[in-house]
Image (cartoon, rainbow, N blue to C red):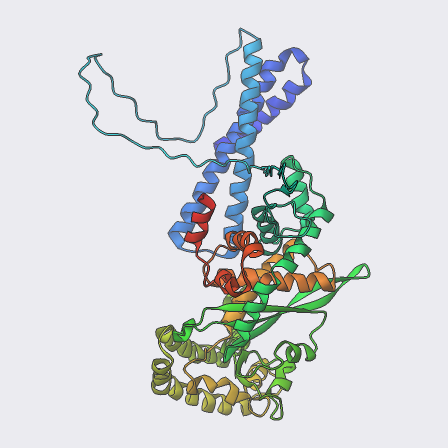
Length: 532
């Protein structure tokens, strides 16, 4: 490696000297430049291989080592590309000057391709078999203008004019097909691509669609899809148990942004083998005031699985009409507070010494993890089976955890972070009962992960669209998320489903609208209709 580095230094010196000479030495200059870049690429390649072998020898290394390997791979990629460019340049110079030999680049060793077998030329050749080579290729998107010709006829006797009806369009002033509309909607709300970026990409493909034109169709589609949204909303609010959660959304306001909220309420009966299909309902609000959950769940009562956010408290009050909502709190939130104090790897990343890890927090995490292990073994079983397993296995662990936490808390200052994590579970009257409610109801989950999964795409999308443009825009996004997330929860391709719904809705009677809901929709039937 040292000899190679010395050789590169010598070659760099030769390169500098060559650049100082007259233009007549162009061939030598190209040759030296090609040798230098090729040698650098080879050294980078060897260093990368050494780093990878060390990682394989000593196991998974630190995050910093992983990032270093990634950087080395990127540097190697750039050097290999530069070496190829210089090699081609040297070959072109050599071709112009007949007495200069072309540069031959030494590349990393590659296994040779197998040679074809020789044949004597006889006609007695028999097929022994065949090999298939598959190549993945991308075909650019195709745009079509579909013209529907409707001939007019007139009767010479009665002078009446007849003409076939115009084709249905999903939106008023319709000009866009259902597949194009579904593409626009899914890319904006499912893939988090704002309309201005879509318009730029369409323009590069030769189709000029302005931002205002696309926005007009998005608004029209939201209106057309309202009946489907109403059915999903009714289905979610018919559940006796819901998951609830919210996440932040930047909202554009007077040249700056303010923190708005997207709320979700999820119906998912799969953990206790319930027969109802899963669905999600989203809402948007400009703030996190407690009035919003009251409005979202007005008229609903049942068990709400959520975190300990105080904004839900009005739902739990005794005098609520039609009935108080029952609180079931999330053990993942409780565990997270202890885990942050026992996360050794996280402290190392933050530069904190390992002795700051709290043994009490570590023990609390281990005890809570034992409950989650029981839950994994009964996931998908009936509510009765889940209840029996919890009474037998989980209840003793929960009672032991309660007594242990009560014994630990008096030994700590009230400002101790571990004490605060313990107080989260006992802070107010009824808090511990809400955490342990799952022990007496086999339908309930130990965590609120169903709602967090529904919001996961929103967290990823914030990096793409940066903020909601207006209150109406946030509400429209919540509307579309209800449709798209519900489709995903039912293992349905949201874009294909939206295209079919938009195509069929203008001609379907109201009584048949439930057929278009994601859990009733058939992808096979849709494919058959497209083929026809």
